[in-house]
Image (tube, rainbow, N blue to C red; front, top):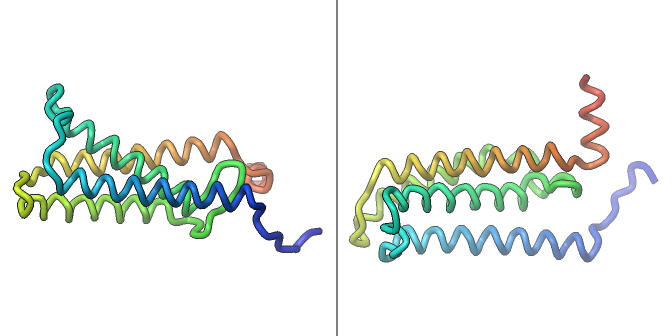
Length: 147
């Protein structure tokens, strides 16, 4: 019935839990990789560390946005409209982590933070593409009303 609030299905709650779990595990791993010893992969090719930063932050923003803001097909998450803010917070956190890296014996590099920011933008862009491709029925109808 219209206007009735339905509780999420068990499968939906499981997907939510998996998304949040993946986002938290990825974010934690990124912090550990950033503050821990330099991984050997960081020297596997020129600028490999920048590529790793970009990938880490892209995946982090994508997972957080899928968990918090909007999930393809399933609709709004618990924090609709938060994806852009999440990306900003992730970039700020990357800057802070970059500044405190020297306390762990690693170098602080502006280019690493730039790679973090580009990764966050990439993750946000992928999230936006995914949501455009797989709209919920109500989102698709709302989009057709704007034309």
